[in-house]
Length: 313
Image (tube, rainbow, N blue to C red; front, side):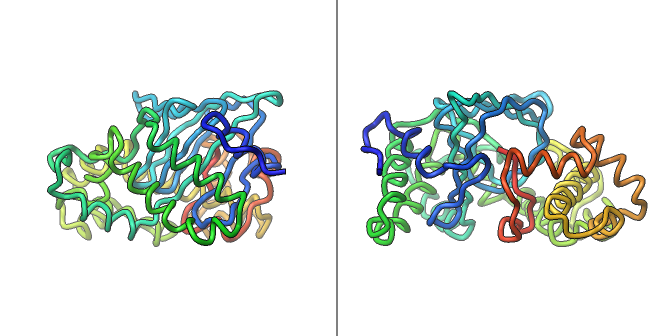
């Protein structure tokens, strides 16, 4: 039975679309719904560009000294993928329910260009990779209509693309949208770092050095290092290591190779060093982490890779 849609029914609508623990796919590309019944502490995550709307339960993200809240009153938006730590509150009686929305970067860039020069757009705001903003009624409204459409296939076929476009727009004009748009649009320096992040994602398992990355970005090593950390909250070497470990984590969960082969595939010369770094990062051995992921996220699939390991909710 399809739940009746009312202003207070967001968790009810989402729960009906997410019967399983972990990520539940939907009929809309880039929209997944997470159900979790477990309190989590200090979990490493690496989110794709997009937004997370927690409809029930609560989450906190920790990046350096910053704390990012995303709960029923706040949402998290990410302009570039950054590794950080996460904690969440949930229970079997009140499971955490969250909508994960991946940006269509071409569509986001189109909207950013269209908004430039309009009243309320501040091109001087510093770019940020991640922002936590108060949930606005306009965003709650589009989420309500989106979840309702997901329960009605004919409605979804007609209205789905427009709802996704509106959701992009609402996030980008939200309370901290200018900081997101600055990262998506980029000034000269931000563009160079964003392009460098794309290069790292493509070649994360190769031998990359900071001088090489700085040279490809057309920057001095000190400037590259400083601007990289300003945007991502981490150093280039730490970022590369985190990306390698998150990719390895997905391979481990998919049980696709031996530990030695996985270590080599993500760029480690030493399987022993890989095992040490993996346990230090995730606080579990690879086999323990595979079991943990299956329990909390469901069965991983190849389709969820897209150059980034799936985030933990």
